[in-house]
Image (cartoon, rainbow, N blue to C red; front, side, top):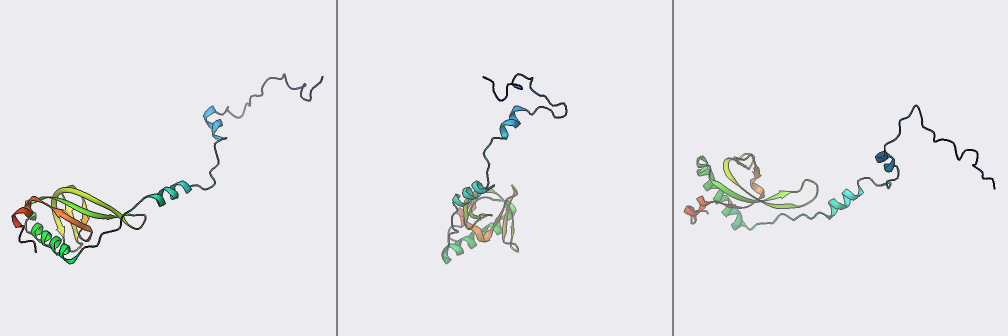
Length: 144
């Protein structure tokens, strides 16, 4: 029985003189799945990422925080160690997360309403939820 390709079946495999042989790793890439919606998985992942809403405070809590800020301003030359819990707004979507950071107080910028720590962190005063420090122990009745 004579086949359709009998005349070429036993010829040597052609090797191009102009084009180098493609490496196996690149040849496999030809058959990888096509992703029509580039970035779709990233959008889904971002949508599923949870954020928290910024808590609202009563006037008493705000007054207590302002009292602590006054005490810190009076003792700023001592560079007291403080632990600040604050709300960090999310850059991509509504809401954010609660962050807790400890460091030595460097400066309170009343114009920009920012606390600067010696480690370079800057915290917006309006985002502060709580401030803790040993320095407040001596002034427990004087915060208001």
